[in-house]
Image (cartoon, rainbow, N blue to C red):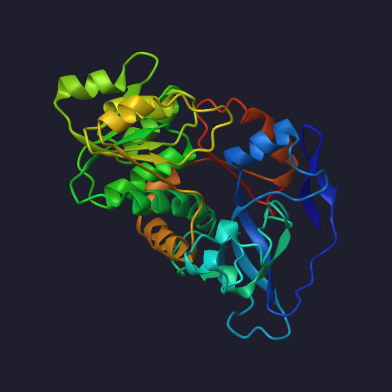
Length: 337
């Protein structure tokens, strides 16, 4: 089969052995796999071992079953949770699958979804409704990240919120907040105008360019009380900006994995009695709820897909996404010529 494999500075198309399912495993024919920002950054920085197959945002159809798997059928449409959990350890019990060492994570420590076929444990599959667009199943993973962040923040219905960063995760978070009954959603970005337009299209009430408008000053002048602020940018100044915009007693939610240390003002944080939580990845519960939300919001999900490309165009797309411009999600479809 063909796949995108890690090479120094990026990815390249290469032949890989066809996978064969072992006990408890299923082979999935990949229909679509999204290029995550973490994939792009890892490829550019060369932090992952060359030769591996990345890709953790994917959906497809069941192609083959392991000898003891009878809960799935060949041809069934599925979204795949790339985080494999053993189901028994402390982290699995807390639905923090990213911390479980009992099973590899697809696209990270095991071959991922930028391939014609991928092997997964049967417990990592989630059935897609017949009416759902199959490629929308690849959007369940980023939506699960967003929903985990909302869960950690525990907002009350009608709470106003700030989403700092309008990349793919920030945009999915806006959809999740709107579905959860948020009040006014203020989105802040310094990326392209196209992404800021997308933020408004999927549910943000106010969209600010952080290069032109200070979010805290805007909130003060507008008379808004923000109960939560979500850092989806990872910029060193993001947590500080969120902290300044929050009302006293508000909740700061760290979602992005920034590459530089944060400039958070701890004096301001403590003096205003703020609370801070983090949301790293998701669990099976989040993934299941994300699937429900994705299938219930087809128009919003389609708005967050910019391009669909074949494997041959994958290496060039990884380079373009280093400076994404208006691009939101680029889906690699291995079957596409």
